[in-house]
Image 1 (cartoon, rainbow over the protein chains, first blue to last red):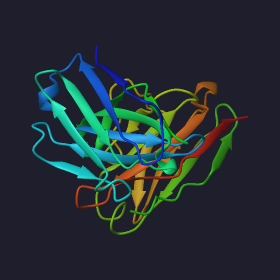
Image 2 (tube, rainbow over the protein chains, first blue to last red):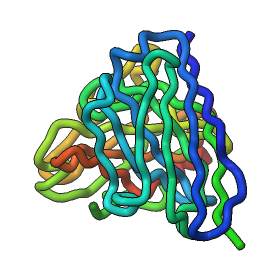
Image 3 (cartoon, each protein chain N blue to C red):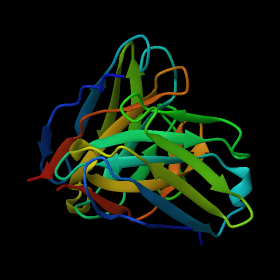
Length: 118
Length: 110
């Protein structure tokens, strides 16, 4: 059974940093691209970042480019999102998801909540 | 990276059909056959319902179907059931390794 479990969310002050993790199991993690998406309270989904199976290629939404960094450790079956220079508008539930095919994602975690507030 | 345009709400009675639209541009929806649809119940993670415009993952009822014409993609739910009441989001590849979501549609089963 495929499982994705996010962790690392919490309350952080504006300008602060946070690292999210996504522990994967039930599939060959190193064979699949992964992504992070977020959902602000009461709002819609927003794509944040993606990474290739090897980790050699990464991509970002304009809204987080230069502030967030995605990475993965295929020996630990874990995906990461390093978030720096956090802003109030980064407050959201952050989901990791597994690539299915052609920019569609077939398994999603339950999310970890990030709140940016003073 | 502008969000795709979805109607905020849609509704139908049990057994009826309802169609949700997702309008983009020639740079995203119109330019690629990489449109997906997700269902999200309150407090739950999204669930993939349609990928590559028309394809259904294993386990998704065939009451759900997708289509595209020009810059607008559509999700049709036939034979509406109470459990179909949820938020629905489209997304599309937008080139240059970018993905864009729609604003979401709240589907109400009357």
